[in-house]
Length: 217
Image (cartoon, rainbow, N blue to C red; front, top):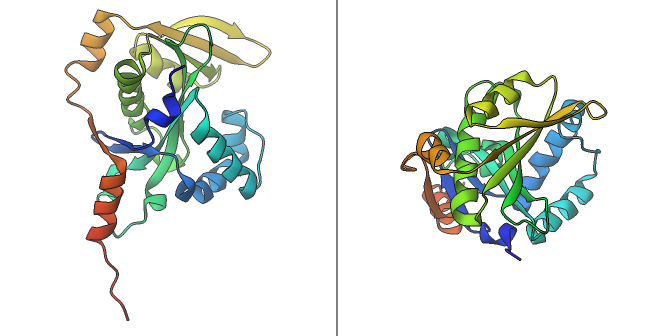
């Protein structure tokens, strides 16, 4: 079985407006604040957790062989080493292996948690980056997403990535969209992949911290 969560534990993906980094314990308090929001609980079909439970969840995700999670950072903020990484967080993105018999099939899930960052194209950029990573690093050939029926903006965005409707659940009020990776998709959506850089997260984080050394009083 491909250990997809552990393969990204030292991976940083840098795009034009966002930086994707592995979900670690430093991110948990901010993530927990987000998930106390009834709106985000509804959007993600999540139950409220205590902070301790959130730490347990982060550790479980970290060790999960079937899940790959990145935290989405505001690149402009992250470029300023005086701003703590936690304050650069704007959302998260996940890839799940949903079928044990087919490791090439994955479900994609994106959350832009901070309201002021929505509607600015970040979801589209993160989708492009994560699909590219999934294809080239994890061997994903088929992607699916589950979206609330009233989330017309997200449905329209994924259709721009050639996703098509697979099924509709009236019970859960959601639609499942899917796409199969082929040469045309890779050419027209991803091109030569010059929109994304991959770096070592540990080195980038250490370098960022070393750049900013607070003055001692």
